[in-house]
Length: 273
Image (spheres, rainbow, N blue to C red):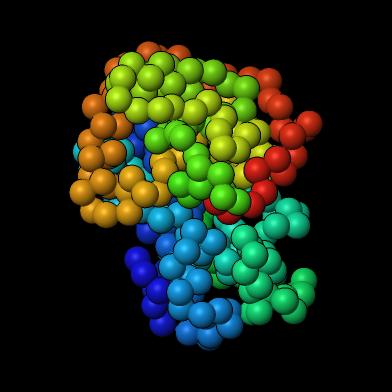
């Protein structure tokens, strides 16, 4: 989805088999802002940047859901409105400054306005994830959660060498075999908890996987690799080839509460990029 005058619903649901053992999430899928928010006072060019959404990841996620048959839940609103991958008490929930860009429409967003955005955008998306998780649990095969994101090729002038990275907290069931499988590809540079730390209190994975004891991993793909449709499809095909072997381990589809590092790493991953 691109910048538009209307957002028909704050969430996109892709149907899939709830008993397949996998649920795919995409928190920053869209840069859409409804007309009544007047682009938050930002130039159109700024809304095409990574500060507004995770470039390329929505199409990659849709391909991956189709190839795996897994259900998927994607946001349909810009994280500049409100970031669904933050806890409701996180000070970066509504960004007033993002990677050097002032967001005029957020400058005077008081508690009442934040609450309106929570009700209109954040909570419907959050509820949809909860419903998809519940469907997987009710199927008898608790889903492993795969959260899809993308990152910029460089940050503050420093190039990032990784093609893809895996972020995680303390549950190794999904991230460790995923890292091994990606490294075995031989033609890509893989990062482990790069360029951010995966232990973020209150984020989507923490809320819907870690706290419930569901296996989980967060993938970040470099944006220049998925900026065009061919790249999105290629990365989805690569992941769809890798995932079945990992998901064949029944440990990934058990509810097991694991230790967590979020208490000491609260808001360690705070900025879009």
